[in-house]
Length: 340
Image (tube, rainbow, N blue to C red):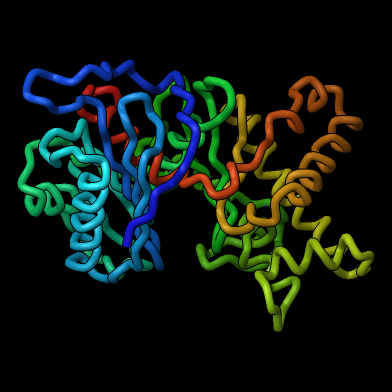
């Protein structure tokens, strides 16, 4: 079930509190923490050592329903603790990131429809009870966890960052002044439902012309229909690079929409970095180049936008880096320290 992730020690961001790496007299090692990124198809978990480096990684299929989710998380925690040689009760904390409406204050989640969880349930308490250990289990929205993780692995310490997820929909996790910004009702970062085009495409939220109707993986599926032998975003960008006129049109529209999301995040929160993640980010450098190209062109027409340096604030989440699980592990540690 488990696999080791070989990686260089992670960068410690401004959200981290230094943790001693010296063992205690009883042999425990303070600062080890575990994070789980629970999605609709898989549970991805990592264990961080006291320096913040990923030491081991496990992956398993998601079992829908509250019992399945709790069981999958508990199994992953035991697997990771065994791999690290750390007793569960000696962990600095555990974090769980998942989609849905999450209340981090009491560890409850509801409307996580992709996980088969609709009614409000105390996920954090259920996990803690099954583990039988007195340690914090921090539950957060998955994008908030990804923002923490992205800030941790980025090449320079950063306190203001947005993690822009381009997947089925569009939304962002926000890290401002080194702390997560959740908002009054937990809806901070839901930029996918801002109107981008007046009287545009209808959205399931009940509005029209929303950002996610143009900047999501679903938007590409609609504008560049299959059949596809590979993910539609990859085929679209390859076809555009090969000179297909229709593909170029769709790609450019998509890049403009993503650039608009970046502009919204910078102009509302003035984040230092916008890290693009989610399934569409698998396109890689061609996506980043296209988005930066739009932002650079807009800057040429606007001295104000030029002064913001938008194109240079955008980057891609490191390929293969489990930023959601890393952020969850950090959140578990920070919860014990009262810093989240």
